[in-house]
Image 1: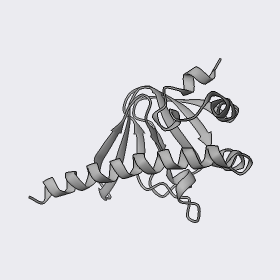
Image 2: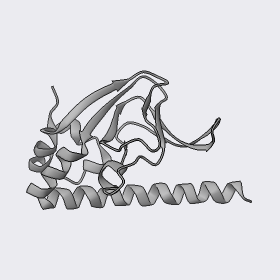
Image 3: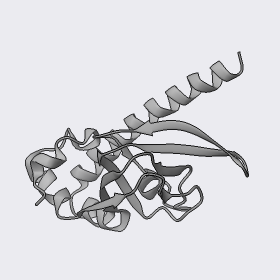
Image 4: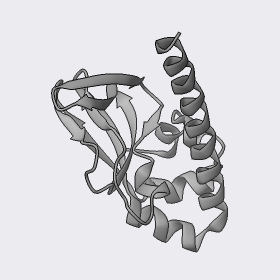
Amino acid sequence: MLNIDDLKSIIMLSHLNDTMLKKILEVTLITEYSAGDYIFREGNYAKYLYSVIEGKVGLELEKTANILIMIDTIARGHAFGFSALVDTEQRKYTTHAKALTDTKLYTWEAANLEKLFYKDYEIGFMLMKSIAKIAKTRLQIRNVQFLDIYR
């Protein structure tokens, strides 16, 4: 059975207090994928936010119809699928997410998180601030990767 101590290992939740984590826990699911399974594909409706409990997830971009490029690997404690909360108009994932190993994930339905955010603005603010920091870091890493390609 899940408890708030389980959620403390998730980087994007690490700044939340126990009362806040208890509220997040109420809308937390666990999903599992086998190695090679796609969790979502670019352009799919972005319904869920995820964090890795066990295993590894690769984020891929489609260069051509037959060529996928791995742009990031997500490991334990890290989150992905931010489009579910950030891209509120389109709600489309911007990459493919593929289980690189057998993988267990914390899963949050965006609609449930948004309801929670309306009830508790502080949780919403703190979680979105954390997501913004993670997204900025990933963007900086990708910028360096692209610069290396064109040198």
